[in-house]
Image (cartoon, rainbow, N blue to C red; front, side, top):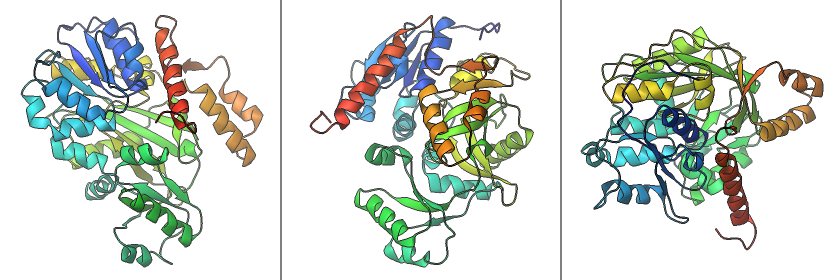
Length: 403
């Protein structure tokens, strides 16, 4: 996507963490002449781009937050004062929230107060904020003790999810986003206790029924005065694992109802900064229910960019005090595809009788417009770097491998 918006590219950017999102921002802003650097573990795809200015790789075994604290706040920091910080992971959001005042003395980042960043990372608090803002959310229950858990016996309607309050830490432990309990209270209790035993706070959340293609998202940036800088929506066609994993197939589409509900959340909650909110339409009552909120660039950043919505440039111009690009509409029908994981999604859906081979192929017709989250002929090394990171992760998970 080429931009014709005149702007000054002098102020450097440092990306903290991320994966697909970090790579998209490095390629786009770097290609426009902005000095973009990146810091993260080896799975941070932006590190491998030829357009990455400086690379600050978090050593294996060291917590990224500890590394970033030394990199940005330690004596003799190599990062230029006035650099714009782009958090691209939940861990980066928490790092900025916990070091807000110290970082603000040297660097630039969006207007979100620390308590907002932390609230959006707390999945239960997010749903509470949605209700307070008049936005529909699934039913959920706090479980902080065995007494809380016992109160749910005979009360919850299965299936339900055991969902972590802090999804990043939970995924580090269990290598999954949540537990799905289909029908058994004893299994529910077992999974809650398993999470507790590993030091994780969790809640029980009803599963919004229906296929994954009922998922949709809204994106915007809310200024310090509460003004939205853009409006963008998309939807999901498939995920893997089905009904619980990451999206494998996205589609750009303007969805007015999703945009209205999303803006109502951001305005009603006093949200500031870059925001993405995901909904699922409940087949029982037809309402959009909040699934989660992300106060950062998401995995679908490249899809938005290629559709004509330069979210990263809008944020950069705003934070550097420049006029922002005004975007009236964007390209619809653009598809964002993860081939390997989408094949696994098809196999699971096909085994359940929910998707035929012919219907799957129809969605992959060559005349459709596809965007890759990774591969680019003009920037090949990220594909190698991503494969290396997967290999290293596999070696670490192998019995006897390095952890």
